Length: 130
Image (cartoon, rainbow, N blue to C red; front, top):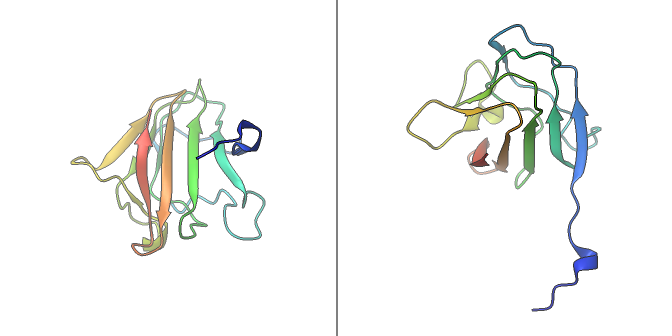
C-alpha cells in the first residue's frame, strides 16, 4: 500500500455560534444544517461556540444520513456539553446512542466528541470522546 501525503483527507469546518443557552438548556433535534443540500452537508468538524460558560444538553441532531461522520468541538470557554442517550423528546431518528452504562457523555469545554450515523439503527452513535 502506498500512501500519498498530498492526497490526505481534509475536514470541512463550520462555526455554530448561535447557541446561547441558559444554564442546563436542552437542545432537542439540534439542526446544524448537516443534511443533503444544506449549508454544512460536507462539513466534518462543527465548532459549537455559545459565548457563555453555561452547561448545555443535546438529545439529538437532525440531518443524519447513513455513514455520516461528524466531530463536535465544544469550544474552550463554553460550559460542559452533555449528549443524552436516546433522549426524548428528540425524534427517534435524531437520537444519540452513547453505548455506555450511563445515560450521557459529558464533553468539557475544549473537548470533542466523534459521532457516526448508523442508517440501520437510525441513530447517531458516539464512537469517541476527548
